[in-house]
Image (cartoon, rainbow, N blue to C red; front, top):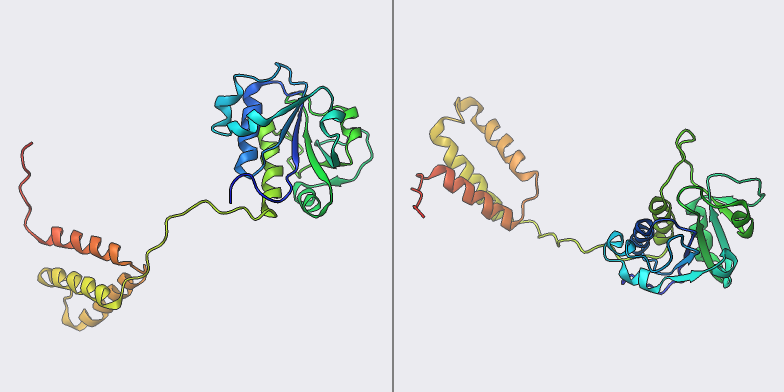
Length: 247
């Protein structure tokens, strides 16, 4: 599934962001979890900001599509569900939800939703919080309740993504386990190399030692490539050293 997904995304609204680098990092956090719609309210240094691009680390599409508004009310004009992210209620009585609870509501609700984030230094003002329908906060160490902008965005984006069924990053396909005859060949090669060293002496313990060796070698679940590699190692260790060729 691509970053631009079918389910309705929440809008990420940055209110009076101060540094272009932080806007770029927020865009990167958004795109990591499938969010692409960013709105900026009165960015301090104007927009576009040349410092945002490098910090976005490839999330250029988010920055290029970002919309700028003068007020928060304008930025969320089409959103029925607005969440103000803050660690304090600031004297405003509203429902308080976690990122997980907010994400669940966003997926279930009709109409557009927005996550609103305040300036890096001071956070959202009381009037900003008053405009929202709910307060979004995270359980956090009260002795150090400071998240940077990108961290706050990524927490919300990640929780939302869990309900969006994003595709997992491509991983290397695992090879199937090797057939038993290949495994027996490797075990036999181990025993053949160990015999001349009297490894299985005394004879009274030989059967138990061979059994332990077999148990060790059958635990990993070798695939054919791994067995061929290991047998090549054994052949090299058991053979004569080849002279190095001069360059």
